[in-house]
Length: 633
Image (cartoon, rainbow, N blue to C red; front, side, top):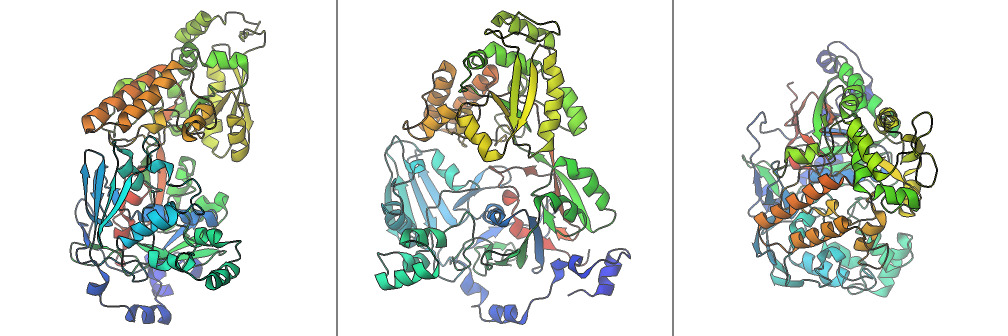
């Protein structure tokens, strides 16, 4: 542990409270030392063929093990960030979005139909039990095919045209999944931030499954965990999205050792983790990660006073000036990463809204184009983002190999004269004395744009668009609703337009699914009922009845049946071009900047990374297991 005098010297004479001194250099406890001493030698904890990560190069260096990393979160549910940023996957993306085997030693794909996975010999879960094909068989037979655990059977994401794959255990280290038709979604599903879980720690979970456990013992487990039945028991103890069960073995770099509820969740390094650096040092370098719960509204302020060693959540560009000034007082570094969303804020016309007049107008592409042309994106960029963003439609970024300038520029240049002409063509020629247009039913052209109000950026942008659209005779009003209430209103057709973040993945490759461009989910605010129809397999929602939306679904189906990268790229371009031309959503700016704050002693952090959920997994593709503390800094 560093002394208070050393801390004073490190901080240039500024004496800080004990709670804010280098948690990075916290000493291990006697219990931790004993636990470490009781572990088998490193050679027995690593797979026979561990994954070697080349750490050194391009400003990065081989690290020294040790230390504790503090991260602030806004609530207990946010421990879900750990499995995302730890990013241990069967197959995962690297920084250039190429797929590489990770937990797997190798994988082989035949015609996008047959996927053979080879595990690493001697690879172990965090409790020391072997990771083998039995962990895949357990999920397939004892979870997916168990009608109590999975009432709907095999997850729909594994079905192609309603047909499940064939699953085979070839040997203790090899499994295979086969389809009669191509399934290019499969690898992206298991490489995603919230991956399809094909394997679970069977040796542990069998204790809570009636196939392997006596009714008497199950009854005891059910009572101890205060759940209703074995299904709820198994679901509670096997949850991986939020790793709340400290006893559940993990393959991640760090494992939770704190049961909820708690104000601090402690994640300790996985002593059986499968990655090493080029010198053979086992990763992760950092021993522990603290997830400290705080009020979301205070996280930026606490970060600026040195209470976090690594912060990416609950920060926004509006916090940048404060955080940058804090660099002068506390040992923190503030970097700006580029957000990968297709638009920082996009307007979503609800093509399934109940209002018959607005529904007909918004389905006319001339209206959508007019609304887009009337947005002064340059003014938004300068006023809200100090000119640091890129003015664009809601589409992909230049960092994507699929990018074309015409997608960015389609109907996105500020041209209120052309916008007015398009609205006149539609028949909205009647106006009142102040220029406000009349709708076909005699109402004035007043449009309510709904928002969750969670981001001040959205309301700032809407204030500017209010003035832009007055120039074309349309007046907007802003209504703020709680997130879940707003989603219900959108799905119920009670909203005419909303504002939210644009395309989630603005840096796709041809091998990533273009499903977000087509009606595929009821979370898509521009066509929630069409998306629900697709998501439910036709059992709910409404089938698309616009030719362009139908075409997008046809193209998505074509992508899913493709066998080559060239075929998939061609589909992507047709879908991107169609979305750009039809303006189903109205983008504003993208490539906006996200503050990422870290201790000045933390090494191997990118200075200018890409920031987003999918495919970046926030920090995941940058391998936080290679971050380390330089105590000499």
